[in-house]
Image 1 (cartoon, one colour):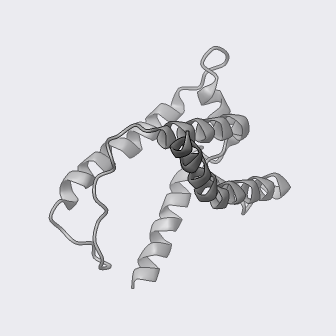
Image 2 (spheres, one colour):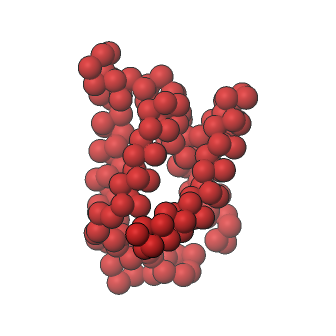
Length: 143
């Protein structure tokens, strides 16, 4: 049952990305082009995601998921070096390519070689992030 719910949720998420234009790299780049030909439509997509999620966080308090397990707790509230660096890297990748992880996975079905190269690069970055963070933490601790 959990696998079926996961598949249906992922499919619904991918369909939402496609219908909202989040898989269109030019639309995303237009959203990020504040001083040029700015396209504000993705603000509605973000608002359409943030508002229901806010309600969902409130609704899930004290409940359990239908498929078992537990809901994740609230995210940490601290702004540390890792969060800032990760956010900056994410933003640079999003701005350069117009893709973030969800739309990148969806783009594999139609994105051609560019989508595959992005996914490989993103995967390498995700795999390398833990060892790089550990090394940075060791270097800072030794200074």
